[in-house]
Image (cartoon, rainbow, N blue to C red; front, top):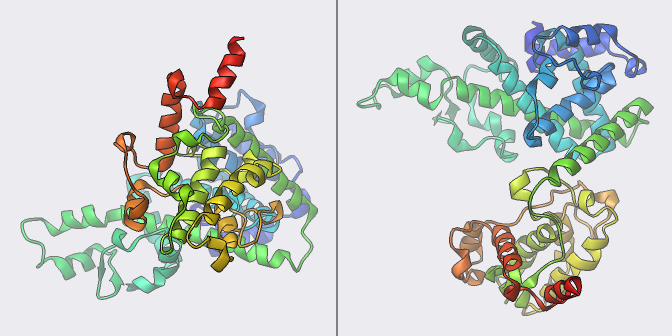
Amino acid sequence: MVLLSFLNPFSEEAEQIVREKSSLEELFNKNKDLIDIIAHTNSQNISNDELIPHTLAELAVKRLEWFVRKKNDKKYDHNDYSFLMNPDMAIYDIISFYIAAQSIGIRFNPNSRESRVFIESQGQLVQERLEKLSTSLRKEVVAKLLNQLIPLDNISWTSLGELFGSRKINLTDLIIDQGEVILDKEDFIYRFSDKIIGRVPEKMYDILIGDQIKELIINRMIMQNTENYLLKVHEMASNIEAHPSLIVIADEISKMLKERTSIFSGSGDIQASKLVGEAFPPCIKNTIDGVSSGNRNDAIVLLLTSFISYARLYPSVFKNETNLKISDLDKGLKITNNEILPVIYEAAGRCTPPLFEDDPQEKLNITAKLGFGVHRVPDLNNEGESKWYTPMSCEKIKIHLPVLCKPDKDCKKISNPLSYYNRRKWIMNQSPDSKSPEEKDKSTKKED
């Protein structure tokens, strides 16, 4: 059933389609059948030829472009990408999925922005394609997909361990009884009907489980399988020579992401600028002044590293909700090396005892928190080996670093140190008297 393959690219049928109908030599050839299907897709915008992929290579890039635009572009029009929801595209869609996956897996680290966007885009596609189906067909397809992904009558919660480990699903999302995940309605009623008082068991099933939990599992399992496939390709890439076409497509994907995220990240009101120490929240000022043993590691590595890097390079991260790498904002790492790391290292030196004297490995952890893997210093060749962590929330600071949390009047209704920083900077810009000496000097020069 092609429709299932349109939703699950890891089905046996999808894999057979790739084996029989794909060719790396034809990726950049104009595909008239592909163009015809897109042109005849309901609601598809065909007024702009740039919206229509003419080759399988272009279709592979469009899959990710759709997701980035949908997530970040206020001018996004779903009719620009209606073809991605057309089941008639199934064969070409499956092939383009593997083209993109192999290109990204060969070229980029599993933790790279390219990999993350691809995984998330696949999950979003699955969800939106399910939503396009009629209620009866949707139920039928969900049942078949679930059977493809977890071909078991009794699903042990441990069989979903990979999803828990990667935090794609939480245990609290599921109803578990005697170690088994309950998804079937009759099974739910059999197990819990005598325990449900004052409510109709059938309605409780619809509220607690229904199709929404089944679809959540399907979505997250396909995302996990996508992540595993990228890792497999990446590991194999070190032993084989990549096809030149896949390298070209990988570079096109990366180029598109940089262009798109540059456009969207520049649309926020909060722009990157020199650090303003006077606007730091109390917890950050206390960390910079030096932290005693017992709090040093978390304060420097977890709190300060993320705060300083985002405050300097990407203060609008929570507003824009766009995933960026440090190199997207600091291409040669000049700011990172000359402005960000010195602040972190100096604060580490003020700790009691100095952090790196008895914990020199924490330098590696700082590099990792910036997204460059476990290495002594940030290197562009290692970027993507780890995640660039966003600043800790105020709630987490209160729990894990209470000694640093000394709220002032501006902390009220603030949920993150970075939000405090952005708000304080805005207030300082409105009040000339609160500007730093350097800022006052600049203002005076401008007036002169």
